[in-house]
Length: 433
Image 1 (cartoon, helix red, strand yellow):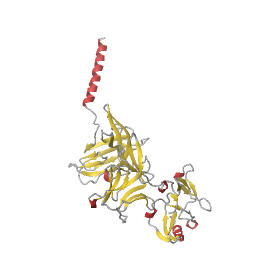
Image 2: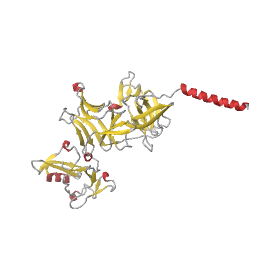
Image 3: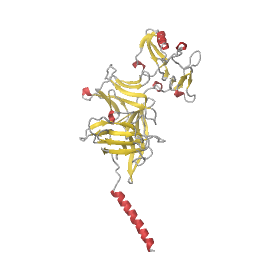
Image 4: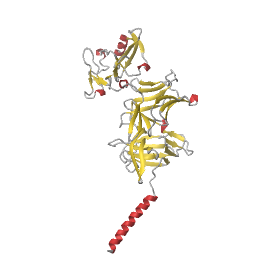
């Protein structure tokens, strides 16, 4: 009996010692800063959800549970990872951290995700250096003008490299990817560029930029064309160039323009929207829409900020697809059909030419008219050539790279107008140019 009692007592003491040890060495639930030098390896041992998000820095906001983190993030099936900043629902319960609903708002390696065992190094000389598991360089902040003392993820979601005097050397807010968060600015000439898809963060052809006469949404086609234009209320500058004296800022319930030339007091709202339930961000998405998100028991779309008709988006019906009330069809000529759907079950993927248009066969090129068909929304901001309809057609036929020509006649004379030739055709729409 004595050996059994001794074993029971020892087991009981071991449990007490374990609990006591845990309570006097608590896990650092809030870790927003790291000092140089430091190094992290992408593995399930990092804090967070070991599958999709692995936090290196976490700015815990206990009052609303919506926090900002910097870490490795992946999309299922999690074969590759992005070094990202993300908004995450984070809370602590019974000595454990819980994470859910992460939303990426910035990524360092958009075009080149890394794998397991990739490393991130923080040094005073180069700042941050990201290498894949084979040691190959993926991304870095090298070439800085002074030594780095550390990094910090702020309460606003800004990743900052700072020096020994706590002065900013480099910050993610100056290099946005596809999103803006509360308190962030977009200066004249800066861009936010949409990701290729919801799971591929590589840059797509859509970007948002601030020029002297307004806020523009562009599709980076051949040539780049604007599909959205927002003029700044009473502020007008007909010079469509970069103006570094103006900037827009995401503040509470609005995206507002300011000017450094007027002591930052311009204050014209570009967009207005409902106040946040907890936290908001806006993202330019792969379909060209600028959407505002908020968290209320889960992420939800609060507003589609461009407020445009579906058919005004450049890729809504794919190449050559004609949009009519949100429905997509292929162009049809009077003498037959020259285009077919890419996929009969998915009309939004667009159409393809039955006969390839090549520069080796220019003598057999012909054009057919599509009456009452136009290009996407912001055609007035495109540079046209003044000409007549026949010359417009001949100009396109004389250039083997031309795939289509748009002709807009004047009100005074239907035979005279403006011509735009297109080496690349995106979505068309029913209606006059």
